[in-house]
Length: 144
Image 1 (tube, rainbow, N blue to C red):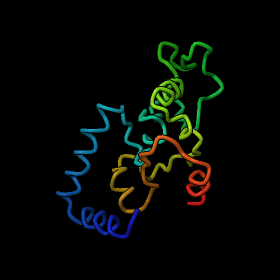
Image 2 (cartoon, rainbow, N blue to C red):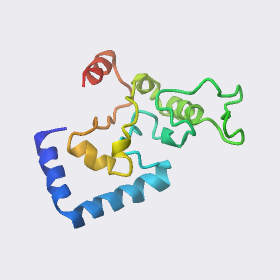
Image 3 (cartoon, one colour):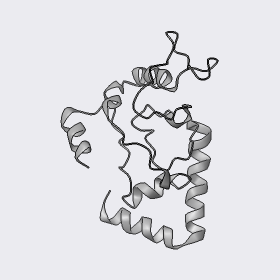
């Protein structure tokens, strides 16, 4: 993000009431719409707006080896694998290219913190709104 967004983010962090309002707004949007699990390191924009942290194994970079041929989860056979749902939605939205992005493992220190505030203060990578990642963008993001 920019220096301006970092300054705004730090200002919000210094004012507890304002910070609580941001956290409340984030939770009101992301939890009902995307099933957000409050990891503090949101990758929704890369995974077709599907929270992959609700996977019982919390795998952020593709399905595990136990996904069944019909797309169901090995841990909870009554549910679809989160990555099966991500792929279906990404295909429908034309975002398959964004699934190439490798995500670092979850840093548990960010759990139950605001991903929006973490993004604005530069603690995590910003979201990308484009449909696809091009080869140069993938390499540039990997450097960060």
